[in-house]
Structure formats: structure tokens, C-alpha cells
Length: 555
Image (cartoon, rainbow, N blue to C red):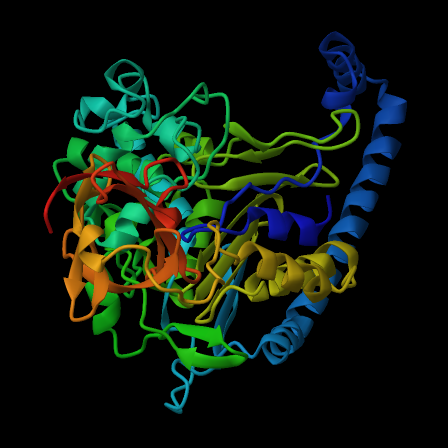
């Protein structure tokens, strides 16, 4: 798999988009190719070789290694020189309003740049201290916080979540008692893809969403199948925080952001809004960029609620690349942090196991491999409402890059990172990444429910026959009520109201709002023997069969 395909595959965190993780080949090398007794024997022979042969061989190897380091340094210098060109090309192609990029190498920040504007029409420039919403780039940050607790002995990766959150019984109480922090952080709990995101869009709080995860069918997927779940990940963060006797927002600040000096970073959306130097979210609608209504991700804060500047991310990347040490202090135990970088789950099985690598996910990280035997850690983040981010680390080179934007996901961070890493590894950009990423992202941004395109039609019954209160345990109560000469549907704990447009055949449409909204959805009524509706199905909320509700009373 090449870099563009890996970037495309790993994208899709923090919004409705499904997210297989990225891997880039299988590690190879002496110990991989040879049976272990033969590899060990060869190593002993080399270590104990004759004195006459050892010195020339060692000198030759030193010369080869030095030459390789020189070539590597030259390619890195070229990549750093051409990075602004890559950024400007991606911004010109996409029109994304603002972008920040940071590169760290050998425990130093070597690039910290801002491009474009924080808010269209404001004249305010992005710089290295501009705070962006990170979306699912929050996940590897959250796993760093939890690694700190694991190193402290507060929790273990295999601590059952129900030990701290007895109300979160994923798959029922019997299975739920076995689901661990590791399972949730590796997206292998058995929960369906993006479980609970629909409840967040309706306005339910974190506690309600987590409790209602137990209502979703896990089938036979526990530890057998990968499914990207923001609220599964959030449950792990919440369990860790409860074990520490804290809230997640306070824990992440006290255990990571403050000790690391990430002065502009927060897991509270209110702190982001209070920053004077922040990047507002933008969407591209009808071919034009415009400021969006924003995205409030507090309910899934561990999975998608971090906001940070590029300068702060440099400090966090240095921590990652230095085994949990920062400026002489061991802030996170090295062994606990290393576990987050280790493959835990196959996210995409190989199409052909004889040729194709499996793609894997660690604990909050995509874990991939690039020849020759280099581990690459990466993650993307995306809010359809106007944020796209990505990070990639090559630990063997002490190298990391992060790109933050304030526009609808179009592949811009992935394009810049793919080009930069090509220059680092090959000395030239290998292909036109935009040509691959643009159509792929356009396809990924399509909604996962049928969009209503039928024209309005007269209702089949008087509108009051459809009115009523409908409910199921997952969505709670939904009201359908007359309002003037029309019907409205009221959803969620705040009873958000939307107009129902009749389509005929007891079908209506309404326009959902939120991160997962993509256009008008059908609302279909089932009529009972008395000529009155007795049930309703809401298409955009029915992905896991939870959008069917029975009448429980009048409006």
C-alpha cells in the first residue's frame, strides 16, 4: 500500500465517516525472514567472528551507515524546504481557509507555520499559536493521558470498564464485564461502527449515550472485528478518569497538558471558544466556503473534543518520540506509552494474505510499516462541520508532522503529509495525491442513509392521524405534533423541532442537523386498524435498527 492509500484509509475519525486504519506493508528483516534458531546462530557467528575479518567489515558497515545518514539528512532538508510549496498547492487546490503545520525532528521543533485565515472575512492570520479543533486527532492524545495513569498504576490496559462504569454494559452485563480499556481504545469491543454518534447529534449528554450503548447488538464481534466507535473510546476515557477520582477534562489537563506545557490545549469546548486566537470552522457548500455553525464535541471529549495549537502539538509529538520523556522529565512511563504504539487489532484484513499487508490499530493510533522496517504512527481527524487534521510519526527517525485545518475534510492534511514523507523517504513526491484523495474524500462524505429526493405530495390521512408520542429505549420519546397547518417532529432531550414534508404513502421527510446530517431523511408511519399511525421509522436514525419507535401516547 502506498502513502496516499494509507492516508485515505486512516481518515474518518470524529464524524460519521467509517474509519479503517492505515498500514503500509509488513515489517521484514533478518529475524522475520529466518527461523529464530538460525537467526540466533547467525548472530552469534557474526558476534564471534575472526579478528582479521571483523575490523574491515565493521569499517565498511560504518561507512555505509554514515552514507545512509547523509542521504537521509539531505532528503529531510529538501522536504523541509519544499513543505511551504506543498501547503500552498493543497490550499490553492482546495480553497481551505486556514492551515497550521508543525514538524519536529530529533527532539526539536524545526517548522512551525501558519497559513491563511482563522475566519473568512476577518483578516486574522493563522499562526503557530492558533487553536484548532482536533476532532479525532484527540484519540492518540487521550491514549497518552490514559498511558500516564497506567504507568502510575491507577488502571491497567486490561482493567474491565464496568469496574468503574457499571452502567456501561456493552453487549449486556455478561459480555460487558469482560470489555476492557484495551478493547475500547483498539475499537474491538463489538460495538457497531460509530455507535452512539446519532444520539450525540440529537443532543444527549455523555452519560446518557454511554449508558445506551448497552442497547446495541454486538453480535459475535467482540475482539473479532474492528469498528470505529467514538463513544466506545469515550467510555474508556471516562472509566480511567473515574478511577483517578476526576473528570476527564480535569484529568487530561492535570496529567498531560499542564506538565507538558501545552498552554493552549483543552478538552473543554468552552475553553476553545474563549481563545481569542482560534480557527473557526468552515464548510464548503454549493462550491463556496463559509463559516459553519460550529461543532460542540464535549459529549465525546476523549475521542474528539481536544483543541490545541500547532506549537502545543510539537511538545506532545516530542513526548511520543522520546518514550514519554520531555526536557529531562519522565512524564509518562515508557512501557505504558509503548503499548499505545503496538498493533492491537487488525483494522482491515488483507485482500490477499500472500501479497497484501493487514492494516492495524494500536491504542488510539494507526500503526503502519514502510520499507525498510520503519514503523509509522498516524491518525486523522475530521468534522464534517469544518475541521480536518492529521499527524504522522516515524519514531526511528525522530520525525513527526502534524497539519491542522479549519475546513470540511477534503484530504488537505493527508495530501501535505503524504508529499512531505515522500520527500523524506524518496527525495521526490511519488504521485499526485490530490487526484486520489479528492474523489475518495467526496465519496466518504456522503451520508450513510438514503437521501429523500421525491417531491412533496398530499398526505394520505388528516395530519392529526399521524400525531403522537413515539418511543423506544434507545432514542427515548419522539413527538409528532400539528403546528399550524403542518406537522413537526421533535427529537432529543431538548425536543428540537423540524418540519415534516408529506411525500404520500404515509411518508414524510425532514432535514436532520448535526455532524451526521447529509440531507433530507424519510420518516415513515405504519397505520393501524383504527386508521391512526401506531409506529414510525426514522431513516437516518435506523442504521442499527434503532430508528423504529412505537406509539406510546398523544403528542
